[in-house]
Image 1: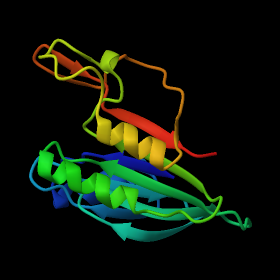
Image 2 (image 1 turned 90 degrees about the horizontal axis):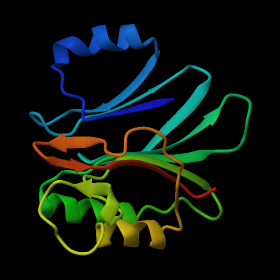
Image 3 (image 1 turned 30 degrees about the vertical axis):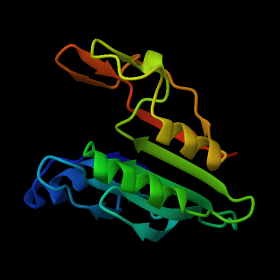
Amino acid sequence: MVALLEIRTSEDNVDKIILNLDYPNLFQVEASGFSGGIWILWEDTIQVEIIKISSQFVHGRAREEGTSQWVFFTAVYASPNISKHIEVWELLSNLNTGNNEAWLSGEDFNATLRREESTGGAVRGLGGSKLLQDFICDSELMEAEYKGSDFTWKSGKLWNRLDRCLFNK
């Protein structure tokens, strides 16, 4: 199972891209111009149920064929527009995976978690996004170990780490 975020392609190219990726199943939220777009792709051996959809995230659950254990997943592309950004936190905070259910969330939150995740721009406060910090704490999520470039987004001299994977088990 794979989630792709911020898909910038026309409807005409989708079939060609999917064919090249070699996943037989696809659920998608279309991009709006050059913003957003979420694709969830999976193999036939995975059962997927989509539970909640927004322009900024897809929330569902998946399980491997022959198992009874469901894993909840949320793929997020949070809008950089501040009013839409606040809205996604409210919607995500209301997702309830149930008692003791596994939850994995891969995201482009368009927000940093810590001060050291941003460099080269104007200093805005003493740390990362309070909304992101509160969401992680309130949802009892942990951040998966990250290996790679210190920053996942660049614009001019501004570099940020906006992408991360969170989980609860």
